[in-house]
Amino acid sequence: QVQLVESGGGLVQAGGSLRLSCAASGSIFTLKVMSWYRQAPGKERELVASTTTGGSTNYADSVKGRFTISRDDAKNTVFLQMNSLKPEDTAMYYCYVLNVGNYGMQYWGKGTLVTVSS
Image 1 (cartoon, one colour):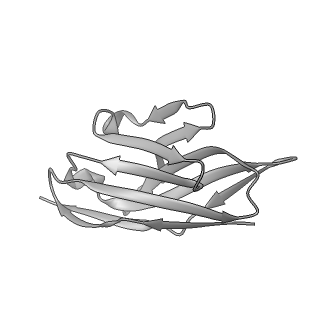
Image 2: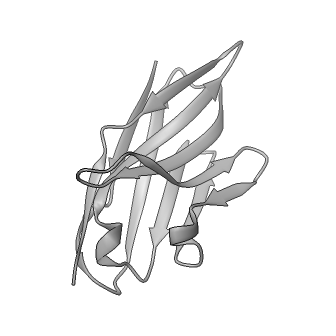
């Protein structure tokens, strides 16, 4: 089992910044994929940004140029730096990892709430 603990959410004014962190612990083999998803009220969960052990990154079009995903493999932690926040970024943000040993297992964090006021 892998446990994920997110932190860094909160209330911020439009144009502000927040940095989310997600620390993984437990039976970790290779965290091949580490991602951030978000879900706004009444909407489906969507991918915000993703990073792999190979160093590739992927972003939703809506956050390109404003958000940056990074990871610290020594600490099994993934970060999401969010700049120029907009009210439409308001959502619960969830950490996701794909832990690969002999097979892959997916894990989700419980989420951290980001609220952007106008």
